[in-house]
Length: 160
Image (tube, rainbow, N blue to C red; front, side, top):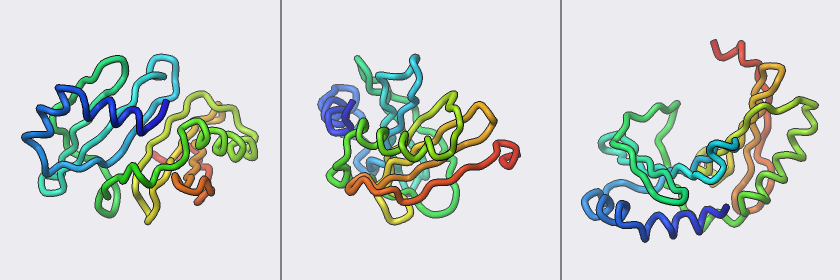
């Protein structure tokens, strides 16, 4: 799985071409992947409209599907454009780096996912693990250099 291949497949697809022709004000915001068996070959690619504060997501797998515009759930700050040329790491390389870091926490992952996005001044892989002990481990990796920007663990009880 490669983000550049996924984006090339998406931008060549008739569903995307038709939508994009009428929606030039949207820009690429993220690529999201759930790393479970049901979603293993699907990349969700989000395009954001800053004036409307709406997102349209394309599901890219064997085929391409599109959601309607959706309201954006976000924290502080604006959603920055994702520049694919800044993503030098492959998904596999980013996940290998994250796995090494994750092992330091001595946790057992029950689910994990990642998003490639431009946030906090970096184009990054933002990888999250949900663990058996009801914690989340978050690892942020620079998508260009492969350096870990930061990593942390939180109890899920802290989110309530």
